Length: 295
Image (cartoon, rainbow, N blue to C red; front, top):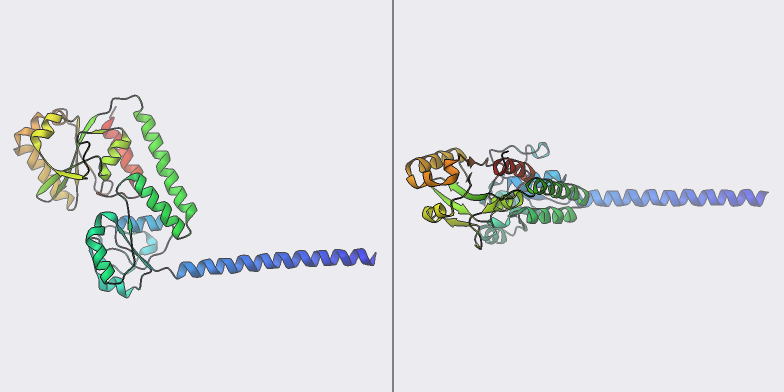
């Protein structure tokens, strides 16, 4: 009897020790994880990068200077200047372990970042597929796999829903104009907006080009005679819309376009349709679908 009780006590004691060990191990692991996270000092130099990090639930130590509002978790953080020309002294003072920019600015920023001794990561947000890959990589890097999977899954579901709606319908031909103050370019299928148009079921009239943007040739564009014209603005959107309105009123060639005759010229909201992707991609696809298939 005593032997049986002793065995029972030993077994119980062993279980307690195992549970205690597991608890200490878990606590130690959690502390290690928290310590690793707190050692990360990340600066986002674009609004899109900051929004992605917020969705991944990752803290930052610096954000870009912008008129756009930032997520609550980043309020009061030091501003590091314009995404195209961030202030290297401010960034250096923050002692970052990583600085997030985008691949479209890599050519201009890579050398300044290297000279400043600042580690930089360039996120490819030039298409939805590339943006999903970038988010997945960040999720892996900062132990936010579940958050990344949730974002990417939502994008994939939206694409399926949009493509299901367009199934069996004739693909409208689309001309995408990207306006900057004083001028405008034609966006090809390789641009971010061109990618969204493709996903939504539109057919870009400019195909087979390697570049994202081309100089405008109105005579060539008129021959292509698109069903829809999309006008996007890059910087100073109000001025660009006025410029487009003036161009379409004073240049007689535009009145010969089917899109103009059928009143299917749309100005795209800059927050949804930038030159690179952002987390509003699903909302942008919904907006495009209403333009491409109004009925």
